[in-house]
Amino acid sequence: MTGSGGASWQRDPPSGDDRPWQKQLTPHNQHRISGGFGIEETVPNQRNGRLTRQQNPRLLRTLLNAASRPAECEANAVRKIVRLVARTGCRTHILHVSSGLSVDVLRRAKAEGLPVSAETCPHYLTLDCDHIPDNATAVKCCPPIRDLHEQDALWAGLADGTLDGVVTDHSPASADMKAGTLATAWGGVSSLQVGFRAVLTGAMRRGLSLADVVRWMSCNTARLVGLDDRGDITPVLRADLAIIRPYERFVVDATALESRNPICACDGMTLNGVVTRTFVAGRDALSGVREGNLIVRP
Image (tube, rainbow, N blue to C red; front, side, top):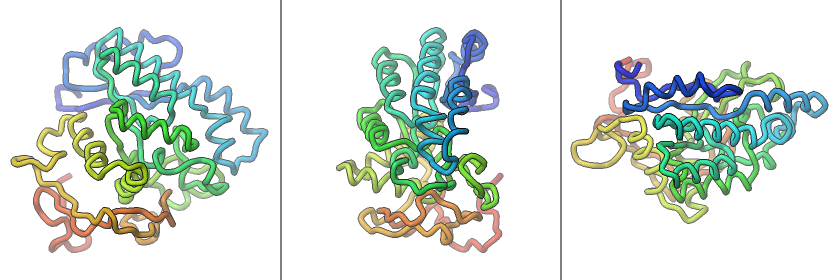
């Protein structure tokens, strides 16, 4: 995969014996490639998951947070990965960070000069489990949505550079896949079309700027995966541009989104950032494109 130009590869987090994972990481440390890890320890999850059988399966906080997927599961996995990075020197990327405990581990790792990077997602920055209706399957994801204390820690991690970027972790699902209870519904958040505006809204509330959001969601993410021809507004780089009105607000209507499935974790929220035009490689993305036309090469 490395020889074919792969920028990263993803594995489940190590559990138990670290040696197989150290073997996996070592061959890649001379390449511009990063191991990407989804970050929750599985054994504690399984043990704590039994607690949920005695609790209301419609409650996000009890089913997917404090009882079955606590922040410690994520932080423990991050600690293991950081330990492997220290042994191997392999550049490693941590996916969808959701907790302040993990941010603390990563902050120390970066202070030690370890080649580790990390990302979080719009839903972890803008939603909190204490203000989500019961059985809101649209927001079921793993790691889970946590509380405002964890959310504040994520924003602090972005502000000081501990977290390198924000990615959508877009995981769309049909209505039948999201039906039922939190225990049975598909786990994943559809956020591709509104993720940038959700982060922009949260950033502006905290006195952060549009430039900060662009750095997290475009410049840094392009750099991390080796897309050297894009990600910034600079001569000779590819002109992937969006023209927006950052102070203009709109209400998210899941049924009006371009997604085939009208399910969105931000449905009904008021967000900043109305997009007026979008350019892909310098061309207006919607100019002269009829429904059904292929607009990018597969």
